[in-house]
Length: 246
Image 1 (cartoon, helix red, strand yellow):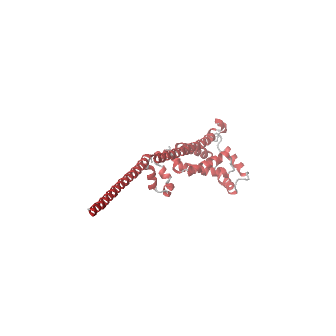
Image 2: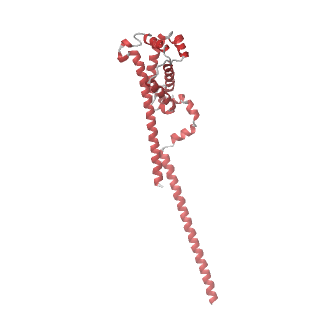
C-alpha cells in the first residue's frame, strides 16, 4: 500500500512540474512576442540601425506612403483593401505614420509587463490582419500571427508573472473562460494540495488496515466459538456414552 501512495505522490509531483514548465513557456512566449513588437516600433521611430535618416519621424509620411503605393500594385492584395488604402490610409498617412510605431511600442511594453494583456493581443491581431492584407507576408509575420493566437488559446497561463495578475485584472479579461468552467471545480483544484492528497491516501490506508484488523478479530472469535461448540458437543456425547456404559 505504501507503494501506491508513493506512486500517487510521484504522479502528482510530475503533473505539477509539467504544469509549471508550460506556464513559464507561455510567459516566455508572451515576453518574446512583446519584444518583437517593441523592436518593430522602435525601429520605425529611430530608423534602421538607429539612423535618424531612415526614421518615420524624421520624414513623416514618406516611407508609409511609398509602402501603401507599392501595396496597390501587389496582386495578392484584396480589392476591398486596395479601396481602403486609396480612400482612407493614404489620406490619413500622416496620422498613421505616428500612430503605428507608437502603438507597436506601447503594445510591446504592455505584453512584456503583462499589462492589459488581452486588449494588447487583440490589437496585435488587428494590426497583423492589416499587414497581411497589404501583402506583407513573410516568416516573421506568420510567427507573430501564430504567437498571438497561441497566447489567446493559453487562457489564464498568459497572465502568469504579469501586472494583470498582480492587480487582479486577469479575472476581468478572462470572463469568457470563467463562464465556461465551473468556479467550484477551479477552487477545489487550487485548494487540493499534495498534502491533502497524502492525507487522503493515508486515511484510506488506515481505514483498510482497520477493516482487515476487525475482520481478523471477528474470524478469531468465530474460530473460538466453533472450538467451544465442538468441545461442548464432544463433552456432551462422551458424558452420554459414559452414562450408558454405567
